Length: 290
Image 1 (cartoon, rainbow, N blue to C red):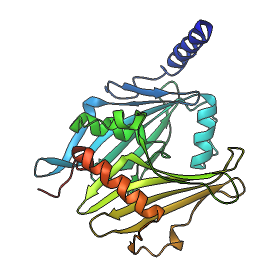
Image 2 (cartoon, helix red, strand yellow):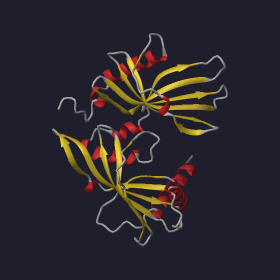
Image 3 (cartoon, rainbow, N blue to C red):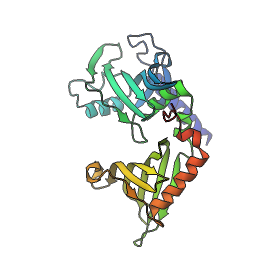
Image 4 (cartoon, rainbow, N blue to C red):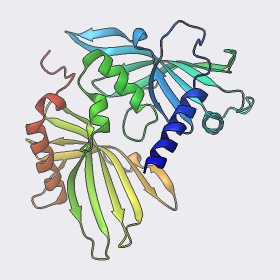
């Protein structure tokens, strides 16, 4: 156990040494470390977080700067994802990005982004037009950036909820006739109340009798508790054959009545109980009373 701890400590120290390249970054920002793994280290600049627009006393548009440093594997993966072929992965040391955040819709948008080598020479840059906000959830690379930026303004515990052991709220569980188990969980870090609707991301997972994951449904839902209705806003599916697929275009975008005795009713009751015990959390940054 002690050897394992020491090995982990040495590994993290090595990462920090490796990712300490290029902090000057053509600006005077002081970078706060967020996280590291074997591909990426993430930072943001607390001194550059600014509220651009407010509604009443509540911020609705926040700007910030983020920084990502890369190991060789992280650089290769990033260049592949961006479709950039004229930069050698060994050149890419770090990137800087200006972003905007909307806390009411839990979105983050890139305004501009630049890649640099270890000597702060710019390798690539892009100004995003039009700007395309994307909603932050457990599957997004940028979610921890979002949480740190929003917490620097509101201090409502986005990071604590993201890392909490009880982040995922079980909604229901079934045992299909063919064996295995299907269960559904709500991501409480994404949960918010808009009018009468609880908005959240749901993770449904089907496992075989051998505990192997067979399929996943990951969807954004709105549940109107007083009206006993629900609708799917966005949905993605996964299985080992097809990988991830966005099938939102197969939904009708309509509210449907929740029938008694169904899994949807079990989910509604679990959501209602959570809302009752965490009212301030689900109403954070709300504009309903402004």
